[in-house]
Structure formats: C-alpha cells, structure tokens
Image 1 (cartoon, rainbow over the protein chains, first blue to last red):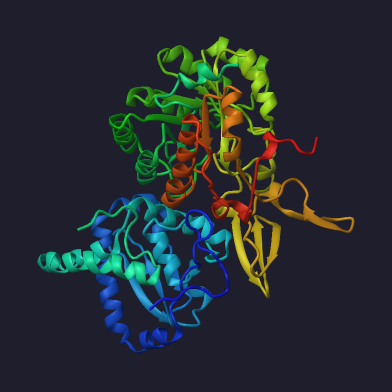
Image 2: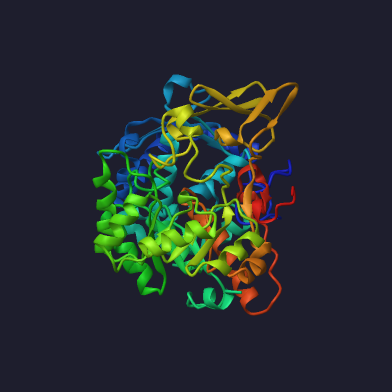
Length: 199
Length: 339
C-alpha cells in the first residue's frame, strides 16, 4: 500500500541514511475514498473509544486541551479525521477536503506513515516537524499536549484494534502478530509500538 | 587531571550518561536504552520544561524512582526554575517531596532554594543546575562549600580547555551537556522570552511557550510567530524553525540572517574522549520535551559511544542530525573556532 518518498526526504527516526517517509500510492488512496464513510467512522470510533477506556491517563496529560477539536490530516489520504478527545467519551468524524479552518482548533498534517510512526513512538514528532514531514497549525499548545499524551500512552494500534473485539480478541491477536511485522517490513511503516513484544 | 575521580562516580567505566525524561514512558525508554541516571521534573512551574502534557505527578514520580532503582539507574529531579516572590512554598514543597520520594539528587538553581534544601534535607544530594550559570571555579567552590553541592552542570559557554581548568581547581563533580538544544544566553538570565510573551524559562519553566507560538503557510513560505513577533520565515523544503527569539532571522542594514544564534543543536559525541580527559563526571542529553523515539535513538547512540571509549575502541559513527533543530549540529563552545 505504501511507497517510499521519491523526493529524497528522509525519515525523522534515528540517524541518517534511512529511506524517506513512505506515502500511500494515489491508486490505493482512491480505493479508500470508495469505502463508505459511516463504516469507516464506526470502526474508528470503536478504536478511539477503546483507547480512551484503556488509557485514561491520556486525559490527565491533555488537561484543558481535551476540550479542543483536532484535525488529524493524513495528507496522502482523501479524508481527514476530526477528533474530540473528551474524557467522558472521545468522538471522531471522517471529513472530506477541503476542511474549513473554523472546523478545528489544532491541525496535525502529514503522510499517514508519519502519523502512525509518531503514535507508535517510532518517529520523533519534533524531528518530523523540523524536516517538514509534519505540519501543525492553530493551537500549538494543544498539539504539544496531544503529542505528549499519546507518546506516554505507548499505544499499539494492532493491540488496540484487537481489544475492541472483546472475547474474539485472541483469535485476531495471534495472526496479527505474524502479519504486522511482515507488513512493516514490506511497507516501511511503523504499524506497531516501538519495543512491542512478539505475541 | 581528575578523570579517575570522575569515573569513580558511575557504575560503568567512563563518564555517567544523564538522560532526559518528560513522561514515565520516556523514563522507561531511557532506562532501557542505557542511561546511568535520568532527570525529570514535577508537572508544574518548578522545572524548566513546564510544557503541556509533560512531566510527572507525585505518584508517577514515586513509581519512576522505583522503576529506576530496581534497574540500578539513578533518578535526578530538576527543581531548577527561580521561585517567584510570594510563591516560595511551591518550590520548597517540590524539594520536600523529592526527599520524601527518595530521588537520588535534586537539581537546583536558586540560592534561596539551595539554602532551604541544604538545611532542611542535609542528606539530600544537591546538583547545581545549568540555570545557575556557574562558569568559573570561584563560583563553583562557593556553591560546594556553602551548600554542599556535589555536582555542577556547567553552562554551555565553556571550551573543553576551560572545563579542564575548572575541574583542576574544584573538588566537586562537573556535568556537561553533549546533545540537544542550545541556549546562547548566560543560562538562567535571559529575558527574551519574557519580553515577547510574558513567560520565561527562569520563572515559568517555558522558553517561547507553545501557547504563544503560531505557524502559518503564506504562499511558498512557512511563517513562524511568537506572540506579536514574526521570528522566521522559511521557503518550502527548508527545515522548519521553532520560534525562539534568539534563533530568529532578522533583517537590518541590508543583512538578513540569524543574528544571535543559528538554529542548530549541540552534538559533542566526537568530544567524549576530550571531555572525559578534562575530568567531566557526567555527560548530559537535553530534551525532556522530546519523544520516546528521540530518547531511544540519542541515549542509545551515546551509550554506545561512551562504552566504546571506555573500552578503548574507536567511537562508533553516529549521526543524529535529523533529530536536531535546524537539522544540523554543532560542537558549540566546546570548540571555540571563532577565537
């Protein structure tokens, strides 16, 4: 699904000489655009609600910024996500582009691989920003609070997705433990947490 | 030379590696990556990285102390801002809690707070923060003899030769920064952030606070603002700047450039042998505000370099520029090539 950036930019991980941040090929992005948004939103809402339940410390770190509206903007996808990280129940919405400036307080934009790498603690947000792989707009303080809260939460999205399935979780977790590392090697994208123990 | 004395301070041969942690997860990462000691702060204005979403509650600090101690790593607590008049109790409570929680040392800058800690908690090990800007042997001796300070973090304005001269003249340990953000001013005495935003690293624990930072795309340029000031504008593809006044670009008299300081970060990895020979007890990495990815990469790189030097092997090649502000690095004042 992903490809290496051909413009010569380099990743914000440890050291030089790494390939650039991979981007979603336009054809794959077009296919994603065909998926029904209500279904996408339902899946993402379950995931985010589960993260909120399992990581309540996130909201402590967000503090007053939990009342902000964030636009998470994967620039290589046809859609973005509005996030309301409310302690009483975080909410998400899938939105098409362009997104009105009045629709968010803080925007974090970059290739999906950069956003996933940051969530999983594999890429440094500041370095992604310095290298222009990541752009932020609006309430900078809210962006920092969200970044710090997510970094401390040590999220692993495959684990979080599996946990959403309740009793069926073990059925998914084991195959995911085999598929995720393989997919990471093929795509160069951080699909799991740094230091994640093998399942 | 005092190298042997310095090496005796750590559990491993060579200078100790002192690593930053802004969150419990970052602390665990630093410990796993090879830190000899980790420095942290409480989640208030008593420390110089009082950023949103960062730092430790008292409960988190208690768990952090246990986590570090069980793995043979020391925990240092930075209480290194300057107490506001009328609010001294916030800072003394931080020192009291540090002693109660059993941290291995507190890193202080303020004379009054040093005096308080020395008298109230005589068994609490005291380190002098870089914020105190003790840059000569007389000043360091004063802190050591008056308050029993055991280690001084030297300001980033000294050459390696000057550090060696200080170490030959003082009895307490010295610690120097080897990686991360640079500060061009006499540390702890800069008012630029306060001028632009009303908040400063010295009093509030934030330099150029994010609450006053704004980025905007203007055509092909990224414009970075701090409060009412445009600090820099860079073309597409150029490294993005963080709008600290001292690293801003200014135009005057037909010249446009970085008047005070280039937006580059310190990387003194290649100077580890010289700093060890100069008698430095500990090498410090800046960046409590940075992510686990930064901590893992930088701490791991310096761990390998220190171990290689201690074992008499050549320093391994390491390039951490991509993690640096400005995407470039300097050895700063350690090599005063402009002299």
